[in-house]
Length: 296
Image (cartoon, rainbow, N blue to C red; front, side, top):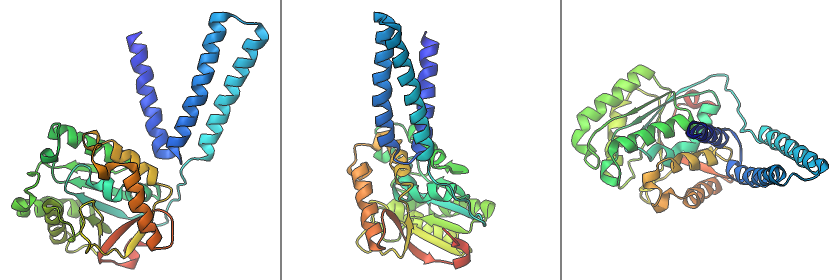
């Protein structure tokens, strides 16, 4: 019995994660599906216990089958659009802490993966200073978050949280090693206009390590200053809920105001309005080569 329950729970988690990643409006759809299925489960149990007329049992069974078919068809119709690019690019995303990439550009990274591009993620600290759990647990959350949006590789380093500027030569070395291995078309990292010392340190280190890369974009963290001045925007309407789910995977940080879905949507709405669109993520440009970003 215990094994059966554990197996059902594991299957539920896998299905829920698949829906969150691949189905539009997954939260609303999941709530509707749970409500419908719960009602049908209760009805089927009642039929087993109360043994009503055969016609009633048949009707309940038929309703259950129709509901399952309808939910499956709806999920198929709501599947997130995937349009493969003719020229896949390689992208390296570098963040200071375990939740930085998801918070700043999680929807963009998911969209890039769904478009056929190759994303490689690097996190430079385990975020011990801002956590109530072990750094290893936060590192595991970073790995799961990156895997959820589809990163091909994820590396989490253990440089000292809040003191990354003290490890500048080593930061440059590990980022440069990844840049050499991947040979990216685009590098994403923190902005220079960020008041968090670790974010600023990673910005400086990435610019040095990626000095030969043609396109470098700087994403928007919750700690950017009023000087953050984006000029590159990505429409993330179809992938915004992926970002919300990925951010929520960092459970130790969930209570912080900037982790809420409402705050994330507010920022995305504001950035989208700047370019007369829906939901968007914004980036500053250090330099941009048109052929490198193509249809990003």
